[in-house]
Image 1 (cartoon, rainbow, N blue to C red):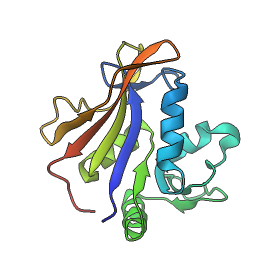
Image 2 (spheres, rainbow, N blue to C red):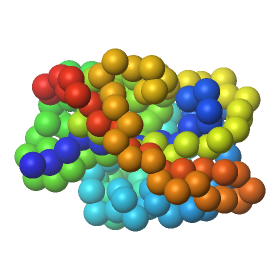
Image 3 (tube, rainbow, N blue to C red):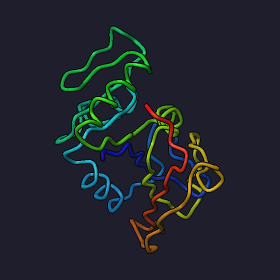
Image 4 (tube, rainbow, N blue to C red):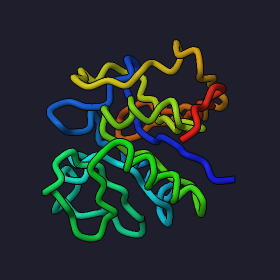
Length: 171
C-alpha cells in the first residue's frame, strides 16, 4: 500500500523557513532526505522548485509541481495548475508508489490532512523562523510514533521523528 508522506525539518517552534530559505544547514538531514525520497515521486509548490539549484528538478525523482499560474510550466516535471489537479496527480502516482510532499509551507499545510505520516527532523533550537507548519505535538490527528536518537548535525542537536496521522482524509 503506497503512502503519502510529508518530509521536512523544523525548529522547536515548528518553524521551517526564513527569507525563502531553510533555517539550518544540516548535512545529515539532507542525506536522509536524499536517500528517503530518491526514486520516488515528490509533490511540491512552484516556489520550492524555484528554490532548487538552477530551478531544476532534483535528480532521480518524479516531480508533481503546483503553480497557480497556468502559463508557468517547467521542463521535466508534471505541471498542474489547481489544487484539485494536484490531488488527482498525487492520487494517480500513489497507485504505483509512495509520494513525498516536500514543500513549501502552504503545500505542507494543505496536504497535512491527506498524509499517512510525517517524517520530521527536529532541530532542538529556535531558528528565528518566519514560516511555520502546524505543531504536530498539539495536533489532535497526529501521534509521535518514533523519535530517533539525538545527534549532532553541523553543530545543531537533531532527531529524526515519525508522526502518524490517525484521521487521514482520503484523496
